[in-house]
Length: 300
Image (cartoon, rainbow, N blue to C red):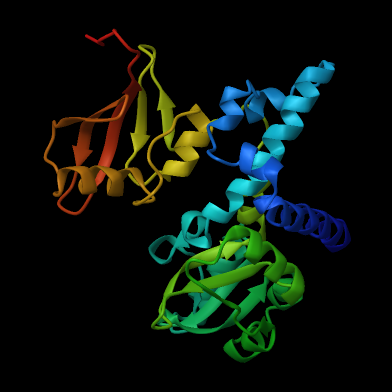
């Protein structure tokens, strides 16, 4: 991902977002932004259909423009908390590890930027770009000192920051990765510019039709989903509307609904969705079968 094209993209997106925010109180925005369901009421096609290269009618083009405006207006409701990688899943370099282990980790890593810390991500020393380490690794000159010399200072983001705001902040600070912190300064997770843009304009890091590894479609129409799957990703992949105002993972949604970690097998209903716990441990739900019911129909 080169720098210059993304600066232009960021500027364009920031301007669009600012325009949407300025229009928020206008009569047009009041008519369009009463609820996100207005886009469906207008018959706007979903994101996947908008990718279709076929020619579209003027009416469809107007509907797509209206749907895009609605999505921009809805950005105010989405925060970095909704898209961040939780600290328990974050990958970084621990300076307390032996140098040989650090070198082995760096040679096999697929990430471009990594936090560097001592013992715990709350003790972060900086953010390193793999490009700056390439020559050190090939010449076997990597040490803790040279690693730290390649780091940028860490960039912190307050939890609850709206995506539209953070998009502008990433551009202003010329950063691509930030650490989300709570009111006590504890790191809660990691947010990258790529994740933020994925949420705004769709997932550009995967080819069309590439399967979500957390979701396994079954022949009977049900879906078997990993308990740690992100609810927003499930909704985007399947076109569902599981509640997102609360827990971020499927495991969190289930444990909140049941107020306990369930044993197997347990079934529950959340809106039009049916959930069957297939596997769980003492600490979390591991696998769940889900399906969406239609009015007047029951799955046997």
